[in-house]
Image 1 (tube, rainbow, N blue to C red):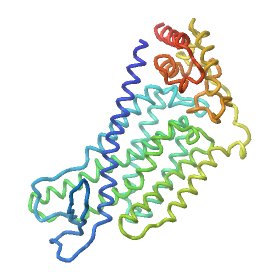
Image 2 (image 1 turned 120 degrees about the vertical axis):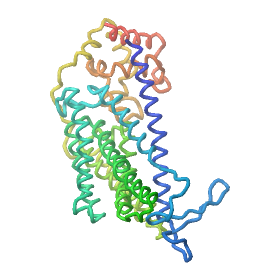
Image 3 (image 1 turned 30 degrees about the vertical axis):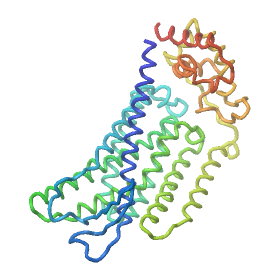
Image 4 (image 1 turned 30 degrees about the horizontal axis):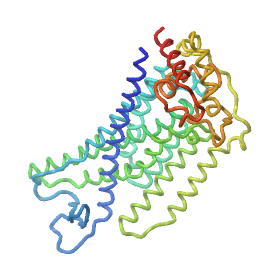
Length: 412
């Protein structure tokens, strides 16, 4: 059974790699076409129906690109669709959600000091939030509010901030940020699957049938594409945030999330304006830096505003935690962890240069060590990832004690 932990780790790695590959493909193509669309130039003597053109150079060659505002007069012989990048990014991301947060719900999804939930309850809330979020957003776009693009984005921003607060009231801080990214990414991918591609297929069908396509389908798809453009960078931030506890594990994490969305807007506004050849609004970088400084301040200021970290009742150990804590090898493994790991993985780290608990993982008590048994086994038992550079001189014999503890407990 203990080999299951190794296999699960590799499965997680494979899914993450796949997610990164597809994400690069989707974001890359999306950013390219946004830049292309904004950079189009209207020139005299363009073919009928052409909205604009652009000349580009890349890889030693010149490219001449033209955009039809609705569609060309005839269906082209070869037509490349950009859709699978989006689909597989979402599917691989959902696979990661299942592997890490649903498979490890007790450790990563649930924080019983936030809300007492059974794993199935937390998973059900997670799935429901993703589905309901898309339905709400889609209906919002189709409502009278949706006729005003910027007014719609303002309402959407309020909804995203509300979700940020809501997630932090239900899940662990790490899971809350991840879910906020998944919530937003679900909207983006669903835009492609349910709106943008179907609308493009209607236009293609009209061309094949010899009908004149209705321009409304392009207008609707354009609005959803604009939303995706401004939401991309915050999604990347939230997906990376699980490596940085100062982002997700602080008292004002939902406020930090709200500011991240604004940073995404200011950064993309600079690129969009530049690509449209409307100048370079350098003020956006100043605003972005100010927002980021505010985030840094919010990540460390709670003690100033609220006093010391609040204490709460510690919930009883789960059955799995009890299994690891009661194992015959636990005492020896605990001594190794406390001697070699807890100087950094503590509420108040004592190792020079470590000011905050790495990844918010504390290994001081029996409960904390038992909770993170699998991570200790993978990081310090089966591999030499921890301690970094073996700075605390953990010996091969001590690693064997950790391995023996985990494998013995998991085999019981």
